[in-house]
Length: 125
Image (cartoon, rainbow, N blue to C red):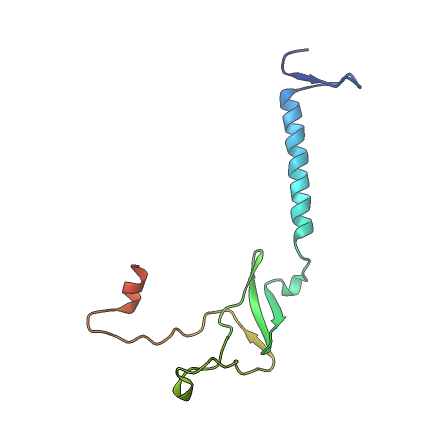
């Protein structure tokens, strides 16, 4: 028996160090693959790209991006324009059906100053 062999005293079988490491790595990889497959939720093939959930204001539909579901542009409050300016927030209006939440909503209005572009300055911070 060479110095790199591992001998089992009960069966008398021996493995080289390389054979032992390959066998151990194979078992670990198979176990990790089975755990990853078991932890993923089962989805129907026809609707695997989108996910719909119920909120207090109505149903919203988002996009599945790997293990993450993205819901963008969900209204979290009513408009703050006009008489609602500087008032406590109000709940958003409810909607019927499913609201597609695939993109961000409009940006807040920004005042412009001569010689200053907020988009350029913002990204340089």
